[in-house]
Image (cartoon, one colour):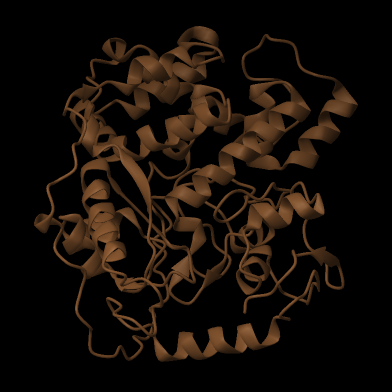
Length: 415
């Protein structure tokens, strides 16, 4: 059961609300196919990064994130409630399969852990995507939940994660993770109890606030607060504490947690030119399919800088792609995607739509009146600014936009 909640927009896409389902293995949703647009013949690509001495990369060491994660746990341990152990044993009933699942998810776990640390969120919530999706980028259809955080389109629109042809922000690991962590931090500032934060994530912020007003803040014991919430909400917290229990004491369940070399830690690369994913993968020194798996929000083989403008990849590949783009910059190849030597020209239809958007944006506008259906991301794009800037200028603090609302957008438009 999913709930729409008030969110705080964040850096690339803004913020979101979230929800939980008992299992995503049963979803089986298939994303709508995108009709391929006609792409002009490619122009000369970026120069090979091998023509320049490679930049130094950190020593490849085995980085164990688990000790750091355990140190950030703040909620009850394995023996706080019998159901915690029931679910912990259920997760690890096949130790080899569990270890393989954790190994597959570890790059995302490390990435989410860094975001949780940034927002000072309790370590248990790093494992929240395990409860939601086992860190899989579940595709959505219509208003069904999607992504490893399991978000519906309505909540994505509220927080600025746009869902459109060729891109589904709910599957954007970078944007959605940043948004969720910002939201959880905000929930804690209101509720002052991480257990209630999990309830709010599953059931809805305002519903939990009403329960606290009616029944008061629950005591530390029992570990699973006895508030009148649906069984699925209580079970959601139990599952979160259960997977945290396994991480807290893996030997108790006869499992070994995997490790990840430092050069395989994921990071975001800001891409300064439109290009196909195959070209990006080539210059990053990685397989195209591997790059697509790490960036499931991009539902076509093309990255347009008018869209999200970033790619998620391992550190070693990120350094190589940045190096290639630096070489291109030095050769003055990035003055204009349309007038210099781009990797690939944008789709004609997208370019026409972008020209139309530009024509509608005033040259020297300082305010904008919100039209029905507009998102903060769309407005930021039309005025060549960022979502965070609009949020700051207008003191939005996660409030939903309303048609007719007057927004400050700065001193100039997109021209």
